[in-house]
Image (cartoon, rainbow, N blue to C red):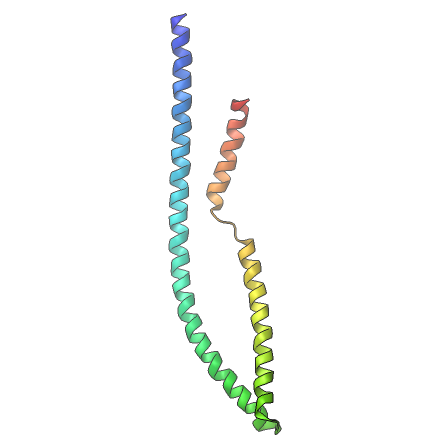
Length: 129
């Protein structure tokens, strides 16, 4: 009887050790994946910030030139050129905001960790019953 008790104890100990190893592995995977995503996002954000600053300056100059060109070519008042350019810029801003929002909504953070967690839950489900 003592050998039987020992084997059950061993089985339980091994099960708990396996569960601990599984959790440690999942945490390590999540950390590594998060670190990798942060590095990628940081590099992309720096590039986008530089491009955004240069782009904003260029757009301001171009839109100012167009706003002055409209009244010069048509004989209208100067405010009409700026109003037309402002309306076009507003439509572009709304369109870009909608595209950005849909892109962020479709993002799936840490897909590998999520999938392995689901797989682990499926694997442990029969053992918990």
